[in-house]
Length: 127
Image (cartoon, rainbow, N blue to C red; front, side, top):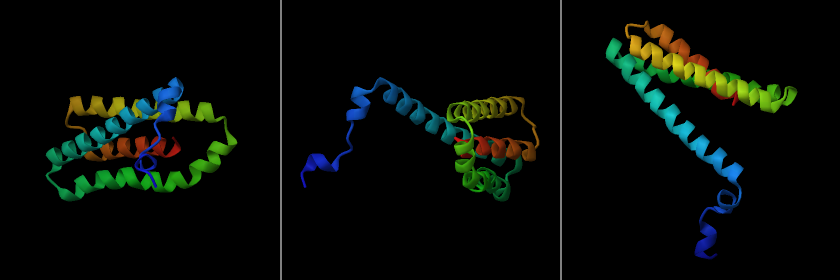
């Protein structure tokens, strides 16, 4: 086995502009999702000073992913995939905007923040 076969093949990134745009977009989206999760956890911690409520943020994100992720595949097979991807992406973006707005407003109940995180996670499960 040569050393070059151990590395990831970057040819698709070099030869396909569409794939390159998709890959870069997914990377930025992943970073944004992680930054959002950290910011929401920090906000909940600042509001409650409770490890239980802070952990509930992770639960509000993980539970919909598991529950809806099981059914998302069969749903995607029944509808137009392009429209489904647009709806899930728009839903994620709308939830991100709402999370930013509530962060700037302050004093939003923790349950409302957890609800927004759960809704956003439902859209992520579909995407």
